[in-house]
Length: 67
Image (cartoon, rainbow, N blue to C red; front, side, top):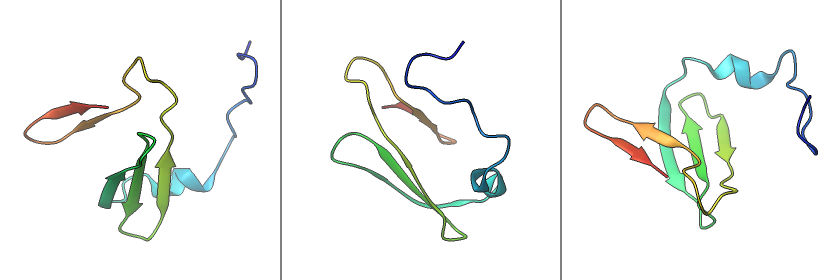
């Protein structure tokens, strides 16, 4: 059963077509979200809805950043 206010995941989406596409740029929004711009021009925004817990992590060859 899904939590209240949540919809089931779509069976397919245009997001699936971005798998494997390199990230051209990344910025953190004023509200703590993350905006990724991919090399193919696709822009994906992740909203941060928690002040108490990490909403996402970024792993680079040198470090892992929790935001």
